[in-house]
Image 1 (tube, protein in one colour):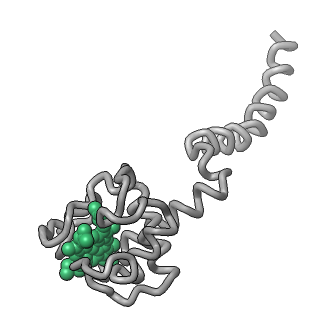
Image 2 (tube, rainbow, N blue to C red):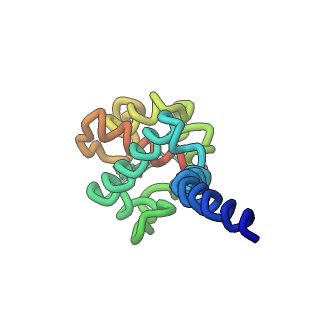
Length: 136
Ligand code: HEC
């Protein structure tokens, strides 16, 4: 009896000491690895910024864009699965660099395109491109 109670006290102390460690470990597990992957985290932030710019510039008045509320325009093509599209405007291969060029200067890519030049800065075009790349 006596000895088991003597053991219980240090054990309880030990449990108390371990608790914050367990909480931290659980939090880290729940948060998942992306927290530790700076590359992914950065592109996620970029994509979120891009989604906001898409709203600000009103791209949705001409395009259907998944994930953007009210983006249901039919003037241009739907941007659903644009991340998997082979060509942009049917003229250049769909790659991050060509997407940025397209967004900043559509007529520079295809002089006959009806997509307007919205005067995007390069960092804005890159953020929007990051968002569009998530549509796969
Ligand atoms: C006034 C209407 C209009 C607005 C506003 C507009 N677009 Fe477009 N967009 C078009 C049209 C029309 C096309 C088709 C061009 C073509 O195929 O030559 C197009 C094509 C595109 C394409 C290529 C799609 C494909 O399937 O090849 C992308 C990507 C795109 N637009 C993104 C955007 C983004 C992002 C914005 C906002 C910054 C935007 N557009 C604003 C009309 C618009």
